[in-house]
Image (cartoon, rainbow, N blue to C red):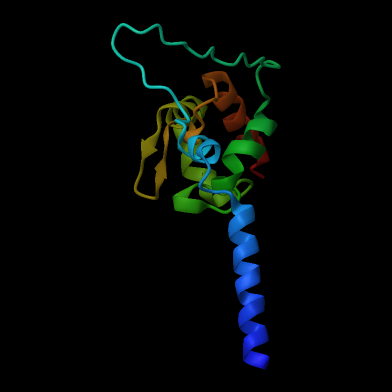
Length: 142
């Protein structure tokens, strides 16, 4: 008797679920199989999205550029980067002069101690922002 009740309950649940699913109706089939995009052919008038307008608040200062772009390597000395504030790691670099340091920071440099990617990998930094960041790091050396 128990098995019969369980079997009947299972059948009722299955039947109610199948009846309410309505996944075989033409409307639901069309909704599930409708294209999500559009295919364009040569000569079609294709809409072109407008590039978003990004308003700049002006050039960032050296401290800001350092904090958001440079610190990830220079705070810990990653990949041979001279650590900010560590005079021993900056000594030889200072001997080359500020102009050379700025040139290496902007254009990139491969040295025996490590690698400096162009602009530190900061694609949205201007040359002036990189220059300000270098001057900020230089000022941190004691």
